[in-house]
Image (tube, rainbow over all chains, first blue to last red; front, side, top):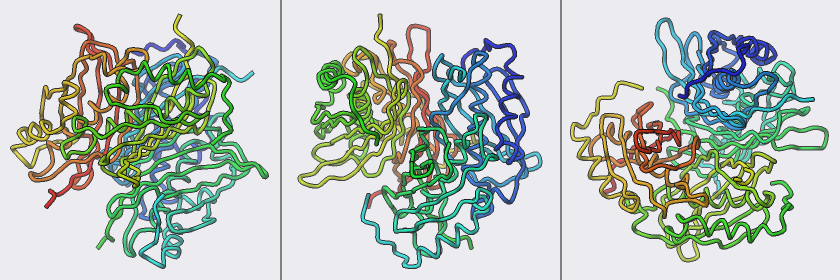
Length: 147
Length: 147
Length: 147
Length: 147
């Protein structure tokens, strides 16, 4: 990972404000648990209404959490008054989504003016145990504000 | 796409039964709209509680719909008494998730005994208009039933 | 696929000139076999010195051919005096790379001012038979000329 | 990364033997520089005949090196008398392929009986400097020997 000094000292408030507007994070009971330059953590609880046919959290829901973590990791490094948009992501599903809670960690791998590449990992937490469920890579686009 | 003759003539019921157990599809108000050998369609309505910070459906939610469509497309070709598990998928996000409804079409590209590769597309529907929002590729694993 | 009217009527010459500068295409004996707006075809012969341990063409070499096909498909739609750069691609390997020749077809899925998304397919040709070996998705960036 | 104790104590010889049969590695002047359980390093020199139109090493060639590194990282953990086959990989291209030499590091993320997921990184080396050019994720399949 590159040294990551945010150009916007107010990055944390900016991330919290944007996250608060992601209605789907409310639906998932997800919340921000750590915000650092180039790195963001989210957590959500297990919920039976988020599962696939075997009772595990649906891979797409874990990817949703991971995509937000990676996108906000990128967003910490963006200038003020910009927006973040995911252009692509890929996930490898390493273990079933079973646990009490799920933690997603997004980390910037390379930050550029236009494009930023992040990785994200989603862990299933069960008591003190942590299992890596999802590994993702993601590209986000830095957009000027809509006028 | 390959010729796709399902080994299980009861593939449609099998897909419907498994889909009915994906609790998250209920949360998204998603339903099956077409089931053919190697091809499955799903639809879901726009809902404000599924959006990201700009008011569009979150990319992860569109990926969830696409992942289920591609996975069930594969599942139509699986033998009876097997299970389907996604091992990886990648999405390119081509247009914002804005529309009245969203349609996901999963199509098998290559079916093998162990691994099946599908593509999926998610379209935003607005009246008679249809916009391709997401293109995905996916690998699923055919698993013997749990004993 | 979108309607694809190139802004540069000289797109074919531009693609041929750039392709002629891809030294690695010479190393692979690859050549352009079709150039249309938003769609480019390349072919290369089988060569024993391009194989992996089982005697099939190495997946990375097939990906190299596909990446060039998809990138030049995008480049047909770019304005004059721009450059094309791949930012990411993903390949699913559907069949071993065995055949007499290999054909890559790149097709633009969505063309934007900054980013273009293409798909590419690589086929193994053996006499009159054609087998899909590789399916890829790719993002390219349109860059202003270096000054 | 998981604890990685190879089931085959002869894993290093097995990797070297298979690598020696990858003819394309000879074409690229690539060689093995480190082999450990779950982790393999390869290096190759810059060569003008491996470049794309801007004089950088073609992304597909860097992916070829990375795919071999990740595949052999997986292969260190496979049982004797098996084969390794890549089923999919994705690369994000983070910096142009310019340098004197290129080093690929493949690392197993999760090893399973059938499928193994690895990541790989390719670095451009220029004197004492090292720049991350490519980040990749990859799935490989463990196959029984052909009979």
